[in-house]
Amino acid sequence: MLTLGTASAAIRRVPADHGTVSAAIAAATPGDTIAVGPGTYGPQTGETLPLTLDKSGLTLLGAGMGLSILQGNAANSVVVCNTASGGRGSGFSITNGAADRGGGINVLAGDFQIDHNLLQANAARRRGAAIYVGGTAQP
Image (cartoon, rainbow, N blue to C red):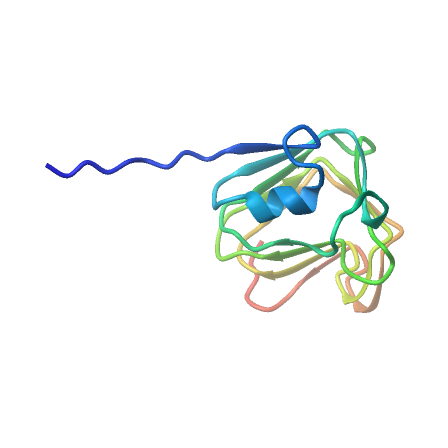
């Protein structure tokens, strides 16, 4: 008889379990949730930008707009979504991103869900200062 184990999705808390959002994303496996507590997260706190979400079904969940702030460095997109399928980003203020496309959020692939976020003071040299959707993306 062959018994297969089932993998369960983990909840990775920032800053309780991981010091940075970047570290939580790196440690995550498909289907995990990264719960980000109140605070400002950016290069000044050790974040590596852009925050690249490249695992299927990954959820990035903030404490709420104005509480969990993802702050860019005015040189990259703050968040890049490049997932095959699934995933969600919710509950953040996203500021100070700048890129050719998608200064705040750049969705390159997949069907990533974006909701309950405040995007402000982001810039794009070509398209989508707040959010850009291109490539094979279908959010």
